[in-house]
Image (cartoon, rainbow, N blue to C red; front, side, top):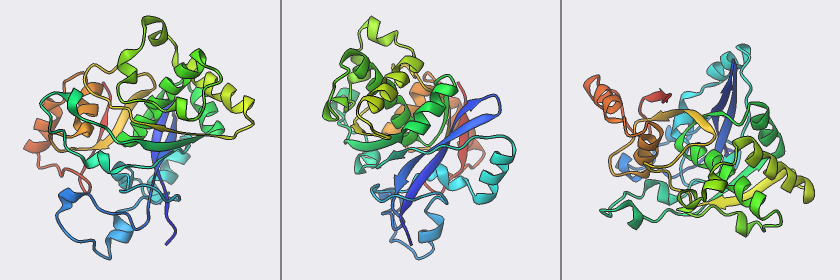
Length: 266
């Protein structure tokens, strides 16, 4: 089967939600915590219906909940669907073993976002509902890429790379840049270079203390302890994640890749 892009419903403004996606492979390797060999049925069940591009080491599990029927229902309700690509790296499954988060190293992940998607984000006031944590990292990386371009309009593709701790090192002036201005800076960059798609990379880590810029709600599964995914959720909920996870445990929710999903709105 053809490999594909994993997608994610994203931006919501009124009845509009832009769907963003991350890339996956049709024969994607499976997370180590599944503790079993790949099964033939996984080729269909462990894959999103909108996947298109090779590159990731795993499928975007939050997107597994979106069937053709669900996507059609969203469209009928006036939902806008857009896509972006992030090649999920093995570091996504790397547990946080250091006592301090500063000791954890994120792997570089490659992203691509079309001009059309950027313009749709701008049209929706730079706000998004992300499906999946890797889409969250892509969308939030866009803000920091835009800030870099506002300060260095001639930055190279390599210089646009978002470093792991870059968001936490912003000056007050840089942190005051609006998401709209940051996104416009990326579109201007594409215009200057006659490009239709932004190609760069990110190493961003989202942990408590991070200030979200673009993502306003997240569709995501329930994650394991000592993971960067749970850190991302904790940052989004301003530390108030235990109440949600206690409820999920008390009601026998399924966790991890083949588990249940949640819509988080802080």
